[in-house]
Image (tube, protein in one colour):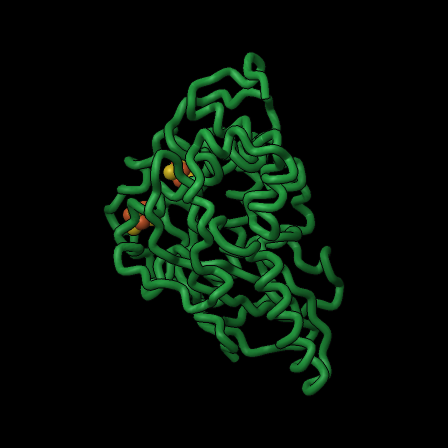
Length: 293
Ligand code: SF4
Ligand code: SF4
């Protein structure tokens, strides 16, 4: 069952003890910053708390890589296309509606949403290993992949987990991270991560200096040797949209209606208009409180 997806695997519903402890410590140490929804540990560490009837987990992955030419600012590759949450969810619901009718089962779909630990489940389902930059890496596709999780209420034979760690002695991602956000135990201190700061962080001023990135950050993926052979995605929805044709100044001058129109249906709208402008001012080293729109 690939149906246009690049990888698929099956696993059981258990979350390994080591992962449970690592996640609990990550929250205790406040490495999740303002992402309070992450504190819902009960559901993340016990899939039965999400859905009493769940018996197995299917994990799928889709390569979203595309070559991007940047000018004087950068946006994470995944955000330069249609919103993957919607695109992938729509496809999976269609596929699983058909399967569930044929084989009589119920299902729930999560695409980087809801309280599921996608990367952990993906590793258990044999899709790849969790690199030192915390991302799921597949030997063939690298880490430019979207993950989605489907919970089902029937027992399925699990695949073998991915047991190799192909990071070895490499630490290129750690060295490349400009804010020192990558922690020793393959987790990220979100409070220092540009991706978090440009999308989730709600403060008026971003507290850490960095360059270029106005939405998301791909630096630790660009540094990873497993991404050097990444191939272009074959899904039209994830191919490049031309928003990078705007200069940084033009983006800063956008009115709310223009921002809504240009970024309609794209992940960039997750930052909202005010934060998007704040992010631009930050890399221009302008204090948002002193700037008149
Ligand atoms: S996304 Fe950027 S800031 Fe975050 S850990 Fe990777 S390199 Fe560091
Ligand atoms: S850059 Fe090196 S250490 Fe980091 S995730 Fe890639 S292979 Fe692993």
